[in-house]
Length: 230
Image 1 (cartoon, rainbow, N blue to C red):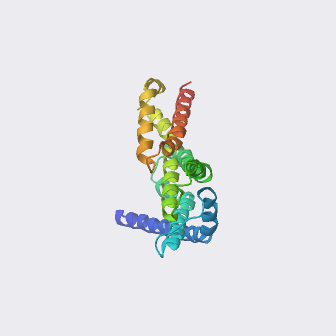
Image 2 (cartoon, one colour; image 1 turned 90 degrees about the horizontal axis):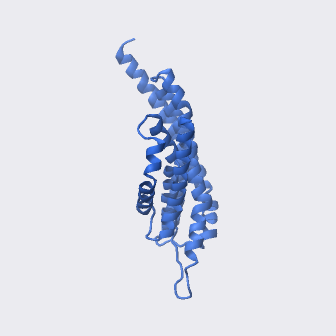
Image 3 (cartoon, rainbow, N blue to C red; image 1 turned 90 degrees about the vertical axis):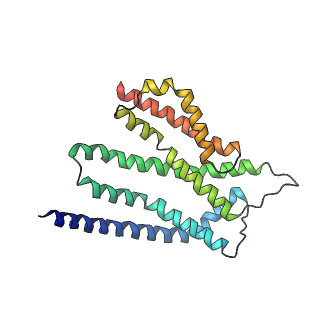
C-alpha cells in the first residue's frame, strides 16, 4: 500500500466522519428549534416577558437557540468521531490514557453548561431584577438575555475543565500539589480577574457566580493531585 493510498483512505475516513458530525448537528439543531418556544418560556420565568427590537428578533432568537442546541447536543457525537479518527494513530498506552480523558472532558463541560442554564443563570437574573424600583423597570430583549445566557453557559463549561487540566499538568510533572497550594492566593486573584473579563456586564454578582465555582474546582484539583501522589 502506497503513502498516496494511505492518505486517500484517511481523507475518505475524515470526510465520512465529518458528514456524521454535520448530520448530527443538523438533527439536533432542528430539535432545538422545535423546543425553542419551551426554552424561551422557561427562561422568561426568571427574566419576565421578553421584547424584541427588530422584526426578525424573535425568529433570530429561535435560530440562536437552535444553533447552540445543535452544538451542545452534538458534542458526544463529535468527541466520539474525533476519538475514532485519532485512535488508530496512537499507541496502546496513549489510547488507554485518552480513553477516560475524552469522556471525562465531555462530562465536565456538559455539566458546567447544564448547571449554568438550569440553576445559575435563572438565579442570577432573579437576583439582579430585585434591584428594580417604581422608577426603574426592566425591559429585557430576548437577544440580550440569550447573549448573556449562552456566554455564561459556555464560560461555565470551560471552567469546569479546570480540575482535568490541573490534574493533567500534574501527571506531566509541570505542576505539583505543593506549588499550587503555595500560590493559592495568587491563583485566587487570577480567577477573579479572569471571571471579571469573561462575564458580561459590569455587575460583581455575574463575576462571583463564575469565580466561586472556579475556586471550588481548583480546590478539587488540589485534592486529586494529592490523592494521586499518595
